[in-house]
Image (cartoon, rainbow, N blue to C red; front, side, top):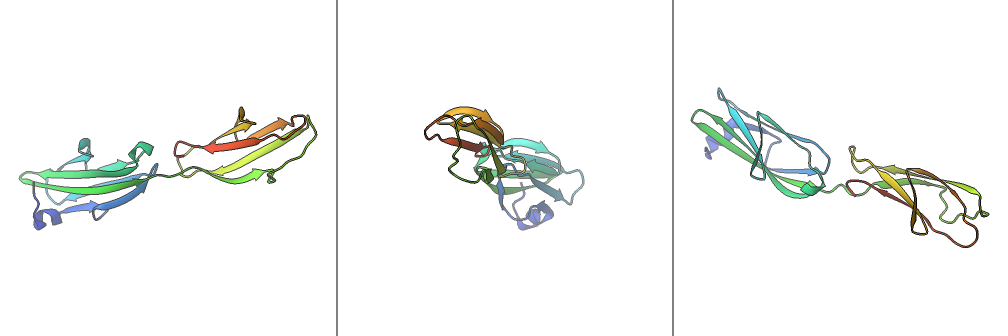
Length: 168
């Protein structure tokens, strides 16, 4: 395989350079062009063959957090050129609770009264789906962004909304 400056210069790659950062769930396109006739392109991810053609798309899942190697090898007759990117995949993190209704942390109500609650969230990634689970005194009582609870009679009780997703 060609390793000289002339060979390496003839392979045009995108993104340029060797270091790439991406977050879980994002898509990143890679491409290569060799100015020769009859070029065959082979792509690998962490040493395993992953595709053919002049383009490759990488969309990492949470299991890919950390460094990875994406390489393309272009072969045309006696010319062979390889380019390697070191791709660092960063975690996305949990969803953000944007608003809780009611906004008070303590709600007082007579026993049996219907109390509506709502949690609005922002996903950490465009492809992320947020799930909201509700518990009352540690016992699961519902799922979804809205919940109506009948106020328990007497004493203090703790209602919690837990927003989670594939990414956190």
